[in-house]
Amino acid sequence: MRNGLKWLGRVLIILLLATAAVGFWKREAIARLWAVNSLFDAEHIVGNFSNMDRAFLHIPVSRGAGPVSPLPAGPAMTLPKVATDWIAARDVTSLMVLHRGAVVHESYHQGTRPEDRRISWSMAKSFLSALFGVIMAEGHIASLDDPVTRYAPSLTGSAYEGATIRNVLLMMSGVAFDEDYLDYESDINRMGRVLALGGTMDGFAAGLTARDADPGTRWKYVSIDTHILAMVLRGATGRSLPDLLSEKIIQPLGFEAEPYYLTDGEDVAFALGGLNVTTRDYARFGLMAANLGRYNGQQVVPEEWMRAATTPTAPTAPGDLKYGFQWWMPRDAQPGEFFGHGIYGQYIYIDRARDVVIVATSADRAFREPGVKHDNIAVLRQIAGAI
Image (cartoon, rainbow, N blue to C red; front, side, top):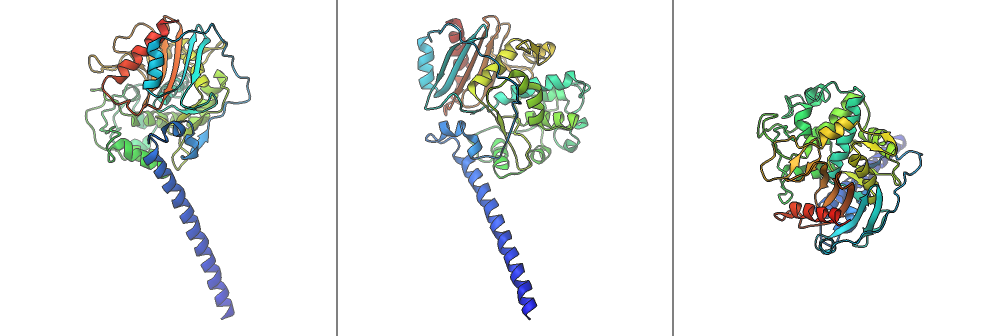
């Protein structure tokens, strides 16, 4: 009898511990879900965008032990009035302007600090594009015209079966994906809940089965396409995205602060928009892109790839922004003018003709208003022209 009671007591203790563990996990998951639902609230958005690691699963991207690359100071510029008005109107949180590789303006707003690691949103796509160019040059991927399923076989049977890497780089996968941030049931918001609750992004992507068009026949901006590219990179190299980005991009650029990726529940990086980087380090990446992959005396990304990636080859609608390999161009782009862009007003803008790089981060809750993207580019152009 006594032994039976001891056995029962042990079972009860184990059950209690298990219940507590499950309760803790649920509490953590609920907290992350709450963070998603309140992420863009007016009273929290600025702080959230500088502290995403407080609310989400994340993983560091090592900057290595190398020296910090210099960002020399140049003659200070005077911002045009349109820019100072824009900073206030569009809730800009940081602005850095570089001319001929030197910093001519650097300012921080809304109580944010230089050391804040700021959420990239879709500027992360341009980082992944640069990494893709390196991996292609190393021979891990045979051709951009290979099907994505060659490197990510779990996508067999999904809407991505039959799509090539080139299709996906150009946002021409044909996959049906609703990117309406205002619709709770949209695909982009369902994906956000997968991320918040520690689900699997690979599983979410493989579960997409509907198409709007055949692969390669129509352009449509689909954020999950970038996750497919990350799956291809992981499958081709057998390595994680943070490891690859660290070795191939971050360390050669001499970042001053260690970036991090938001992750899903399997430690898989949120490739399409989860990179967190300081403004000064975004500028280092921008300088590399402006120099067609060359930085600090080293060819970090092949020049041929950077030229191809920043050439508007996707068949976007007339009068709309143009698109390359995960980089944007203005609708009336001048030679050498392109930019990385994320929702809520994140920009790495490059004008090679003027030798200007501009980084702007924002918490602009009105970013969806008609014409805002074009107006923002117009302001960035005026800043570049005022130097």
